[in-house]
View (tube, rainbow, N blue to C red):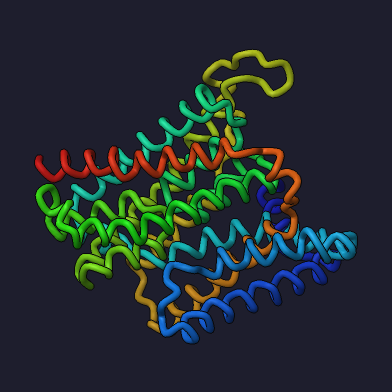
Length: 360
């Protein structure tokens, strides 16, 4: 109980956090406003751009120019946003989906998501560590982003992987670049008629939701065909999001294979004892269940979704502030190559998985 109380205590900001949190909040609110304004100013022509992308970009600009001059006063609050605020954002993400949505697309979508997630993550790890020689932490984060739900999965996996800020940013960059390309490419391939011999409209929705990185990108790619296809795509994507909690638990277990002190292999019991349970991910599942079974007003749901958008944007802005361009430059082009290879796999390999499941 003492450990639980201490853990809960860590989620309450203290005086030393206030300045940094105010700064991060202002930056995130500006990015949310700018994202909506850009959509209005361009009459909707700027598609797939999210407040998360704007937040990490603005954060990186400030983090490599003005922020270092004030980091001593702001760093406690910025680090709080990267840690505790991030976990709260993942928890509140549960207000964006329900089990009823899962039931609406059936087992084919669930099976497809599970196979795409597993194959994508394992292939990313093998190619990244064995062939491209990308460092393990960056590889794991790229794998999480490609296989589950983009930037949200990357930053949710960071506490388990314990990666440095620039590695998280690199992984998020692969999501932004290749997810945006996918968002535009998928509807183009469908309209050309290249996918129709293999997948009908409903199956195209499942294909889109099971293989495109970000939720926002799935919304664009699905609705480019029709509203019904868009709904199927988003629900399929949300099923992938729900797989985040067990994924993080399995990842934590896998990372305890050896002792961090002397590199010795650990017994099964010791590995179980050393697993860092991602409680925030399981509370996220609990919120999904509550959202499914407990009646909630539309106004309350909208408020929770808006709060989650703010929290996620705060976490991304804080991440950008602590990302140094010199560290990204030092990482080289290999992470981008790995992201490109997984992008190709999601299109071709993910497509084959969808075709096989659809034919069963």
